[in-house]
Image 1 (tube, helix red, strand yellow):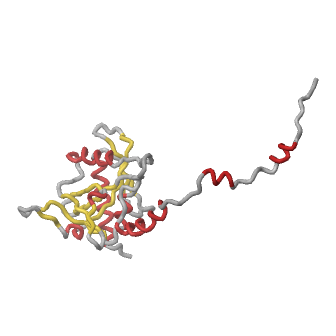
Image 2: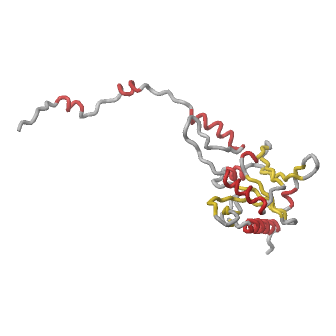
Image 3: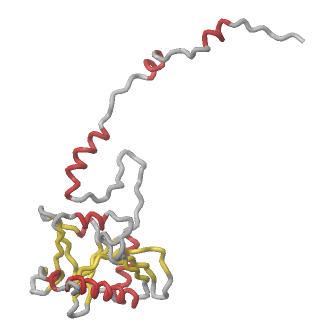
Length: 222
């Protein structure tokens, strides 16, 4: 039996990225048995190895196939590479996950891993899916520890319920927008309700009220 080359390449990339985070002193746990879009769960630690109490999820893509669409600046220098998600299913999973997620492109020839924080702002709709720019300058090393920690911290948010509008859904995938557009108005449409007085007038008196009214109450003499 021969293992597919794609599986071998993916395993090499995951091992390399895990090693890069371990060198930073972070905890890194693989999720091969339950992977539905997250390859590594990362425990965020500072230079003194103090745990921050925060976690990151990482999705890793390995191989030259993920570096075939570079973005260049006006001087011809590569500033990053486009990653495409044709049905935006995985992207919606990452940006709506309870944990912040990063996308990592690993180059097996150079041994370098490039990353980007996944948020609604980093996702660009193409009309037939989405694409995400992974900057060439974002590498997993000591120079970018602060940037990785800042992303892990900035992702934390609460869903405010006060006020007239709920903003808990900070990001909605392109494929779900039409469904939301049709569903939400039906849920929030106002209904006409009867006036409180008319509701009270239609209420039937309790069955014991007539008996109480007809009873002659007399004080007890001692």
